[in-house]
Image (spheres, helix red, strand yellow):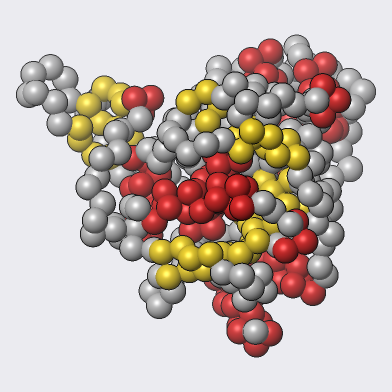
Length: 378
Ligand SMILES: [Zn+2]
Ligand SMILES: [Zn+2]
């Protein structure tokens, strides 16, 4: 994650080339030649396991390294051998996504691997932010009969828990003017910001100046200057930087569905991704949330095509309120996600989800540096 800050600074100096993405309404159809998935070739590795050597297997090692499952300190010139490095990565991935931990590239695992997802890693400095127990548990109140239930929180933060400082509660956002987005598309982002504003003391106001806005939204294609190149249709959909960077990037090669306002559901367009769903997720990163292992949560790393997922779950709300507190007008009407409910085994199991401290300090220092440079430049 540290590289995000480093490259985020350089992004100010080397302006990337934005492109114009494809936007479709919920009632239109995507041209057949515009669909596909850059990761579909991974399905050819079905059944691969330790000891095998298969042409191209190095590519899936690169995938796992990008999302943190193989240490970024290892050089990227991987072999095609199914070695212990890959086995360990597969096992950690399977634990994070609550799949059977086989250590093999079985069919279910690969079907999950190719689902479009956020580009922000799930594992930082070797520590998964997703599996294990969340920061706290809380008791769901039932009628007093039967077993007690705990809903386990699985939200996470970036190293050092960066957040927007107290004196910056009213944030502005702007769009890269070179994308020439329509009002309809801009309004999708406005609705996404409102979802987070409703539960926190934060406000988000649209500004015209892209250079001076706190949060800068842009669609970019391929390598766009921050060391995190986009990869074409599907695969990685978007990424965002932790506070107080404000960089919010979406893959300009995607076909995006621009839905009408409304809650969770399914789209009539099944071969594309809902823009507002991805926007709500990335704003979570902009505010300081990492990925969650709660499948229904906004901060879960993947999203299937044809799905609209825009409603914050209690996991998302509690995570962001840990950072900023609650909106005084928030009535708390967010239902706990059913997939997080489990029987109380008597084990409190609330070991804090901490990430390596030395890295946190370094990250904080880098953030301060970037912040100072921003002030200086502006
Ligand atoms: Zn993400
Ligand atoms: Zn980027």
